[in-house]
Length: 112
Length: 114
Image (tube, rainbow over all chains, first blue to last red; front, side):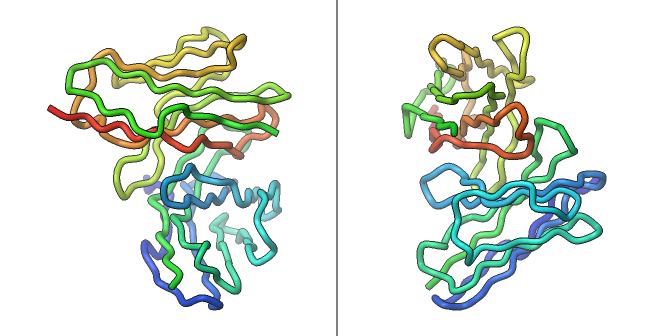
């Protein structure tokens, strides 16, 4: 079985641009969470989606948005990129009610 | 709201020596506790977790952690480390009714040298 897959693995964007990151959960997992990991820090919770509905949101500005599709894959969108948005963005999938989150390899975003 | 404090940002250790990584948390509600490991250029992998029951939990690769409610701690230990244990280790908590949402500490970088 494939694990959590994220694309792209790396990308470079310019300040002010928009970016879309993608995540495919493990088959059978209906919940996807997004985390931002700035270099030297622990991951910070951004969003959780379950059955296409937002179930939780962290302390991030409205420039960050996400959605989940009928096949349970998810997109994270960030508008008006700032240098401080440079980070590793991690996606995790979970079975409903489970305590175990399975993480993808992440997308390394660099904003220049 | 919860918070997680990992008291050491980096821990150098010699191969076959013991290691302890310290984690303290604060929360006004019941929480579950986790240790995740991150190898270079990879995502996070669950190492072990405490949900309830025995306060000592063990992983298949020799790590163990003990939940101490009175000290609000969940320290991670391994009696003898290998070079392959070089990685970053994150302590995390989640509210018991908030599955899928983790609050992480800042991480502890373990560097094992021969």
